[in-house]
Image (cartoon, rainbow, N blue to C red; front, top):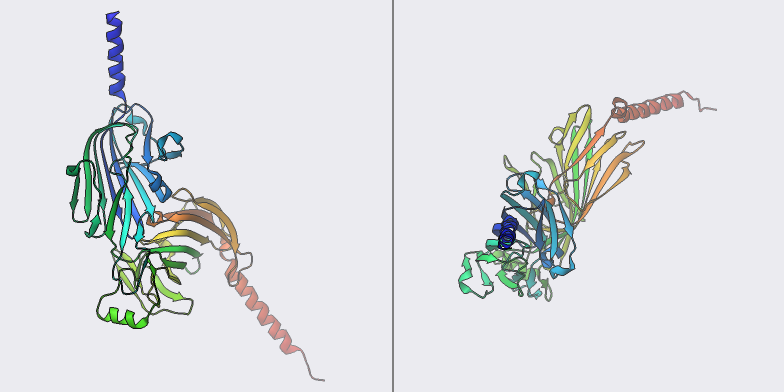
Length: 451
């Protein structure tokens, strides 16, 4: 009997030792004005399952823009969200681990892009108020269904002017260094250890809190012109504290002269365009806007936009930006087929997007074979676009996504074929129309209209 009990105890110890363990969890969240990027590194050992569960707080999930899990320095792993009512609102993400990771060690990186997860305080400010604050609430722990030996949570704010960063039950576990707050280390944290309270971090905003209500992009392909032409129609809104009272131009001019503009006023926006962009233009509903500057270098192309008027809190501004790139920068021929890579968006890193629509307009007669979108949650539809001198119209793929961010600045890949006859459709149509016009004119000149 004693031998049996010893054997069962040994099996129990082996089973416990074989259970998946988090050797170390390090979470780092960098907060911008209207966006945040959270990166959590999980160092695993004694892996006993092909699936690994990651828990995400209900607040983060409600503001989630993009999520991806990858092996550190390697491939992105497939993952699926699971609803579990027993987790106090926490969402479970099941990750498919590589086959070779069983009973070994592995390091995973979970990246989250979050939109408008911080709140402006106060909700309204006058034109004379030079600064405002942003409130961000989080947990001091990373909740995990596995035992964790060592855990740290870091919060990075855009400014060292942090007014409040919370307390824990152990003050020695909270440190502040400039704009970085560290909670931990927490040693030997039990599975499903869910903190009861949030920690509020209140910090002074470093600029206006901007968001795109909608970005409507069209990318038109021209084989004869050897170009791809972009047009972005954007509705920009300042979602920081609303302006309290009336706006006066005199006060704004005085603040500009004294270099004391309020933090909440948006007077400049930067957009990173594809490399070697040409024929760049910037217009709004009134007409051409000359207050823009284009910077081109080996590192990329940056377009600096200055709105026609200062964008106060709660105000919005509608404008359009366009540019061209050569076909060789976005397309290549593979086995007689054309593989086109078009960026879905060029969203600045600190701007949240409510709705983004990208239309890729192919040449007339093109036969679309495949469309690949590099992120989940997007819808794909198809339509026909008619432009100048078109006969049968251009096949168009429309990709729509909501709650996007800079994490969605990736390429949509479209594979299509274009026969020689369809490629020559437009010049043949133009030639036929010109010939018909010439013949009609010649015949009319031969008609004798004299009585």
